[in-house]
Image (spheres, rainbow, N blue to C red):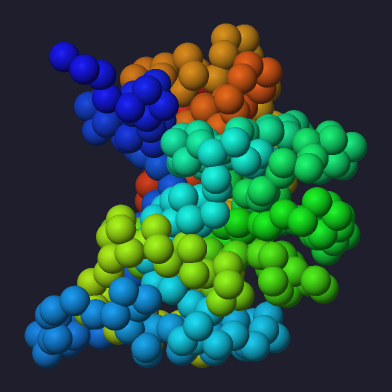
Length: 389
Ligand SMILES: Cc1ncc(COP(=O)(O)O)c(C=O)c1O
């Protein structure tokens, strides 16, 4: 038998699926996979139901329904002061995952170099490699996740086609500052490169911080592609509605990839998301405030057990140092044992790096209901501090 594609078959099942399966098998509280609980906006559910009942049910425009493209452009003006042409600069995709693949397949020519920042979301590297890109990895390290500017500059060269970046960042909770964005912008201009900006957590940002898209910085309007996700903004991760915003010349090749991968995305869900993006400030503030409270609840619980917990400015995730509870093995073994023995699933941070190095950190998702967070803490307290629980 001839083998399948060697790049894709060289990867195992994604860690999120592996940990979720293990969690289900052992009845564990699943703080592993990054999905929210109990935050689905009722108005969007009603809008989707209405749209399903009323139709239409046939292929919409491959670029997305006009109402959603206009809503994405209006949202970009409202939050970031961007003037976007909804008909030429916005494309709707089946989730940010598809948007990322479209950008990478649409832009990379075999042999192009692609700069990626670790720890990274698991789809980036396989898709870059499948598109024929040559990855140039730059590592952020715990506990500060500082951008190593020299290493980043050294990763760029004459063959650099693009950089992939993610802010607010999974799994670190880092939010890139304006000075870091401008440093990146300089490199992009100097090397005539593009940036694929994964901004799915744009509204999950805490403590008064504001998300700044790279595309809103000077000279970046023609070089950055901005990706958003209704899955994260409206806590509806199964809907898989994403959107890419970019200058027309950049969006054109990306739309070609979309044309041959999914072509369109369900109309009813697009209609509901179009309504959702126009939600009042109270919705967006409530989402961030509610998640910040969950973050604080889980952080306090973890600290009470003895974990050192790193700060989190955005995203769904807290990172804890597993050595602080006396565990000296690696993070994959820790997460496996935590799931099986304590009944709480987490994800090893090493899964977000290509090579060895970071082995002592576990990622916990805090976007869960209070009951789930409290139960996870109770179980971990019993496991790590049996006398006191
Ligand atoms: C950084 C990052 N990018 C993209 C995605 C995928 O988004 P979507 O569900 O819209 O495909 C996720 C989901 O967890 C993510 O964490």
